Structure formats: C-alpha cells, structure tokens
Image (cartoon, rainbow, N blue to C red):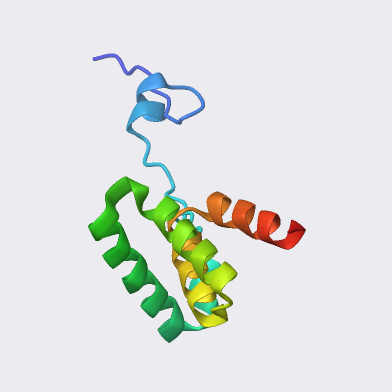
Length: 106
C-alpha cells in the first residue's frame, strides 16, 4: 500500500475551503443611534409617534409631517413644530434637514 501526501485545505489554497468557510458577521449599521443615545424615553415616544403617523399616511407620511411642521412653524407653535420635525426626521432625515435649511433662510 502506498502512502500519498495530502496537504491541508486552507482558504488560500482551495476553492472549496473558501466556499465553505464561515464569514465573520459584522455588527449591523444603525442610523438612529443618535436618537437612542439622547434620551431613551423621548426616542421611544418619537419612534412610536412616527410609526403611528406612518401607519396612517403610508409612504407620504414624511411629506405630511413636513407640511404639519411648516404649518406649526408659521403659526408660531414651537412645541408642535419640534414634534412634527422630529417625526419627519425619523421618517426621512434628508427631507427634514432640507426643510430646516429652508426655514432658516426665510
């Protein structure tokens, strides 16, 4: 009986070893980390309000929240403005930042 040398399979030398190799999973990206770290209770309330608003208005929820923030802004209702802007920011951050830039330029 003859003995044949069989080298160990490593990812660098074998295609099959690379295919079956377990990949290291990275931590998921989370874009709402700022809200969670500021104040957990306030973040949860804004998130709940945003989800309710989204359930009611669907894909147009962010635009509707922006309109409500604009109405509150021109009526001088600072608390309402902040609330609607937070909802808009949760649903669509770019839309909210665009609105803030426009409101500051007025």
